[in-house]
Length: 446
Image (cartoon, rainbow, N blue to C red; front, side, top):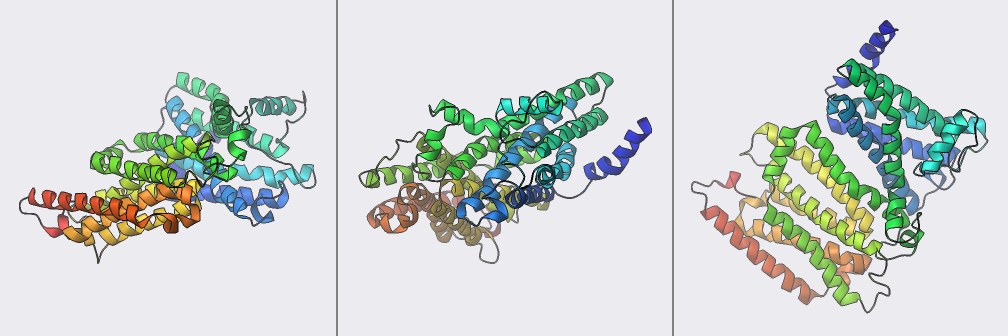
């Protein structure tokens, strides 16, 4: 038996753990599994998703809502396995993401038990897991939304993670504890990913399923995007915690490069746009800020401002010739990650917000990427920094103005916001440049 586990380790685990592929590649592989799973569900099981439909809601479910559920599940599991075994989180992440293809079992196996498969749902209800355990031993029937394939996924996941935890825990005592904790770890991860929407619904008084805040409109009209936002907001700090355990040195580098003034200004700009929209359009839009989820949207908007502002700062450092090449690579990867998170947050808030945030990052391209690199010059640098902040104001306004944001945003208000922003950034540019003797344009302050 020992030889078998040694062979298993050497053949299927160590090559993955020691892989030189970047983290982003493993994330893309896992994301590919998730998309294939959802598309297969649409073809073989749950009607109305994946390849079985082409509506915009289907796209939201396929590319954002369901993958966020799986990423939440995997990240919580990775963190808990890391703390229980003490093993390197980088290696745990590689192994779990590569072998996460077991999520494909359900849509491939279920049609063998029932023509047309099953109507699968999130395993976020504790009763679903309890009934699944009972059904495995013939003590009851499957709970609604469960399937034989989901049971196979769950039990196979427990077995594989138990083997991995037993192989990687450093001491016999810790091996035993880690193996015993595996079922609890996976149940916690599953309930966290599947139950967040129910918890938010219960907190805001809509019943445990929270139908009132997800299905009654508000500033975010799509229930699918509301579900996605509930997953995404807690996922962001979990990602930072995982990255902190993944590479503290790089995270420290990123945190040291942040400028609180710009981050606060970015959040205030987005929040100011929200306030302007409410003041200008509250008499036109009926029921504004009556849905409790609207306050979650406001919080998400402030988070979006901070993330976009951070990405802008990292963007500048990623192409700063005065910074070491290895650090520039770190900043580029961080910019890419924050770019994706910002787009996801903006997508949850609305399609207009999504396009506006893309415009924000275009400003970053013009400012920092060669050959233009307009951040070298005080006037152009201050102009595009101010324009970026103004774009965040428009993102906040878009929660009320929606697709007509640019046409209903008062131009007088636009000038009253943009010109002071430009003056502030222009003054900041001249102060920073004069404060640095021997300053060269190629290595100037962003």
